[in-house]
Structures are given as structure tokens and as C-alpha cells.
Amino acid sequence: MSRPAAICALTLALALAGCATASVIKGPPEATPIGSVERGMTRAEAEAILGRPDARQNNVSLYDYNLGSGREKSGLGWLPFMVLLDLTSAFTPGVGYMMYREWRDQRGRVGLLYGPDDRVLGLSFIAAEIAYRGWRIAADPEADLALLCEAAESGHGAAAHTEAGRRLYGVYGAEVDVEAAYRWALMARFAGHPDGPVLVERIAPLLPADLRGRAESRFAAGELPPCRAANTS
Amino acid sequence: MRQHLVLGLLALVLSATAALAEDYVEPAARDLPAEQVAVLRWPCCVTVRVPSIDDVPIDASGSPFAGSGRAVLTPGPHRVVFEATHGGSVAHCGMSTTRRFTLDLDLGPGRSYLAQSQKRSVDCSVYLWVEDEASPEILAGEPPPGDPGRLLASLEARSARLVDETFAATRAAAEAGEPAALLRLGIWHLLGDAPLAAADPAAARSWLTRAARAGVAEATPLLERIAAVDSGRNPR
Image (cartoon, rainbow over all chains, first blue to last red; front, side, top):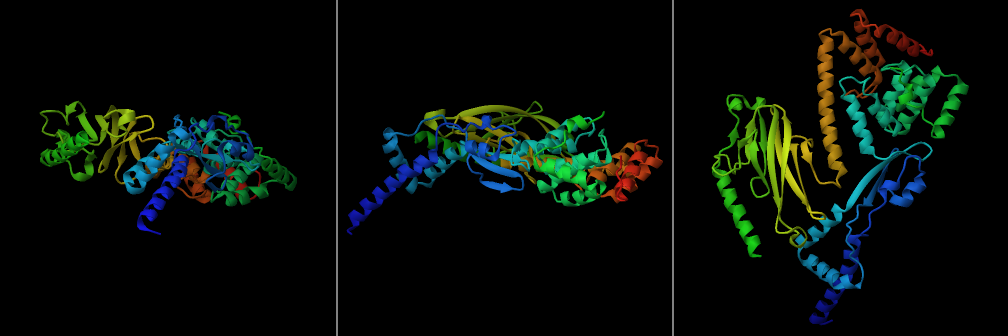
């Protein structure tokens, strides 16, 4: 192949690749309807909205979603622009970076927390983390139990571990309830808390076998004990 | 193109004058050692300017501190006014976008903070935040959205610091024999909350025994429940 022909072929290849690349980078202009993800949804229902998770750790699944640029960039009218943009970005790293920045700016990320029945317990891992950490630094932990309960009921492992201990020993205004403590300890273990298995082993012998079996069945069905309602003070 | 050249030259001139400017040192911080003062830095002056700190003019005309990009302050609360200016996305956002921020900073001793700013070209929003240079903690302000990892890292750093401080203060008070602190530290060990890695009923028993001796009424029934669990009985 002669040199001019090779240059023409390369330019054409870059231009065609440009249409595809720029279209992918721009993404769909409409936002993912993140607001329609609700607690109690099954994993399949949540993923029909958010798509497949990008990462998964214990009971937390991370999803990338589109915030929506609100600007339509599809159709044949945009073809010359896309070609030009891609050709420019091929030779000018700054343009490529600008395209990346624009793409990144319209992407969001959310971590959903799932229960043992694979239903959505918490709509944001970060929100649960904020609530739990907020409780830990509260001047009066008993007065701010709503923060702990918000995190625990969202499926946060450390909060579930604390709630198990609170119900086992009856501290910070809770009534002693070993069966509830056992289910919260199972939740802590399910959410990957490192001390969860130890706590489960500590509580299990305190329950008769039939009660223990029933607690395990209720937990597997996603039935967590109420946290806020357990407060006596 | 010519405007970009002018901006570039302006940046060079400002960088040169910054080398000549004097750092603002708060009068009360002048005689304090480095570990007892806080340092605030900002990328002066093309992107971020500080018109005033506690009403003292800094990056203002006639101020000897204009262009230094650094202030030495006493620890504690300070009101700092920032001004952030960004170019780029000319067709969408105009030649430049400027926004003013007034942040109340609670500075820690021996710490150094950096003010940073970014523009989001999608909607031309300007963000400014102040972060601790030794950790990912965001002290004040707001970084651009879309990076929850950064917010989580900041939250982790801040809560870890606050939890460590609360735990250390509780422990110090408990060691001094303060009854409420003895009870709280006992429960802390019992529940195994951070900075502890796991529940430690033995340590809890020790602190709660001291709390009971100090006259804390809740400690005695709690000790009985711990004993019940330890011996495999329902604590109810």
C-alpha cells in the first residue's frame, strides 16, 4: 500500500472509530431513574433500573449510573462533530481528557445494601456509614440511637453488630432479647463484620434449638427485628 | 487564543509576585511553636483567592499578604472568604466562572490545610473545599459530585479522628475515675465499637466493676447480664 493510501486508511479508521468512541463516551443523555429504586425491591428489580453491579463486597453492590447531561448528542447531524472530535482527540491528549472529564461528570455511583433474601435494605452504603459513624461520635449515644438504627436497618455490618450486642446485654435503652440479638448477629456476619461469626457463636448456645432454628428461618426470609421499637427510653 | 495567552502571562506574573508576598501570620500565632499553629494554603491567585481571613484583607489590593497563598493561624474557628475562578468551556460557560465562598473553618493545632477548587463543565458549577494535607479529610466546603470514594475517604478520616479523640478522652476520664466515663468505656468494650476491633467482655467487666464501685447504678445489672452470657444462660 502506498503512503498516501495508508494515511487515508488510517484517517478513515480513526474517523469511524471516532463515531463509536464519542457516542459511547457521551452516553445516553437521559438520567438513570435512580429515584425509583426503593427499599424492599428484589435484586432483579433494582438491576433492571441500574444495570449490573460494577463491584460487589459482602452485601454491598456498587452501581455506576448516568446523571444525564440533558444534551442530546446523537443523530446524523452530530456525525461530522464526532469524527472531528475523535480525530482531534487522537492527536491532542487535552481534548481526550476533556471528553473524559465530561463523561465522568455525568456519572454517579451508588452502593446498595442487600438483605439475606436479596432484597434492597439500604439505598446508600455511604449514607449508612455516615449514620453509623455519626452515632459513634455522639456525645450521648442513647439520645442518638436513631442514627444507629438507620444504619442497622439499612444492612450496615458494624451497626448490626452493635445492635446485636445492645439487644444481648440490654444497653442504651434496649430490652434484653436474645432472639433479636441472634438475628442481628446473623446480619452482622452476613454483612461481613469480622467479629460477626464470634458473636453468632456467643449467642447461639443461649437459645433453645427450636428458637434458634426459627430465628435463622426468619433471618433467611429477610425479617430483621425492629431497632427503633426496641428502645424503652 | 490571545485571551488564553494573556491569562497565561497573568499566571506567570502572579506566580512571580507571589514569591515576593508576605505570609499572613495572625498576631496571636506569632510566638507559638509550629505544632501549636495551623497553616492554611491555597493555589493563589489564578484559581483561588482569599479576599479575607477573619475580616483581615489578604488577597486584596494594597495588602502586603496578596499573592502569598499561605496563612499561619491559631487553632480554632476562623471565617475565611474564598473566591474561585475557572476558565474553559468558553462556549458553554463564558470566558470565566467565578464564585465566592465563605467558610467557617475549625483548624487543628499542628495541621496544614489546602484549599482546592474545581469546575464542573456540565453545568458550569464551581466547587471549593479545604482538605487536611496529611489525610483525605475534607474540613469544609464541597468537592464536585460524582466521586463518592473521595467523600467516603474524608468521612472515614474525620470519623476515625473524632472517634479516636472521643475514645481517648473517655479513657482518660475513666482512668481518672469519672463514673459516667467508666460506664461508657465498659459499654464501648462490650459492644466492640471502633476504634476497638471486636467486643471484649473481659475488659468490659473490668471497667464496669470500677463503675459499680464508683456508684453507677446501671453497672451492676449489666455485670450480672455479662456473667449470665459468659456462663451460657439467657441474660433476661
